[in-house]
Image (tube, rainbow, N blue to C red):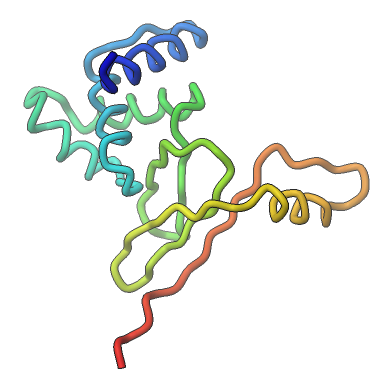
Length: 142
């Protein structure tokens, strides 16, 4: 079974579980996020899928992304006033936002670290999600 078929099957099932149907547009947008995991903006996703589906509109891309977020297939990543970015990596992780290039990188967090972070919550509280963002840049070569 090829990777696109696995992605397509998982997408179709998640959408069906949410009472929605799979469409070629949703499939193409989802594949664009999975193929190059660089946390693209909606405009960047649009540019990628436009080459494969010239008739697709930016509004359709936004609608597809919103559906993917609502179905828990994609996470929204926001950096203050910058455009929203989309991340298909659903396991708990942090992000590093390179302020000099604008690139966003996934940072895996050990389970022990996540447990320690959740342990500092006020008594009686629990966290369903933890969002950690590091901001900075690569050091200049000396």
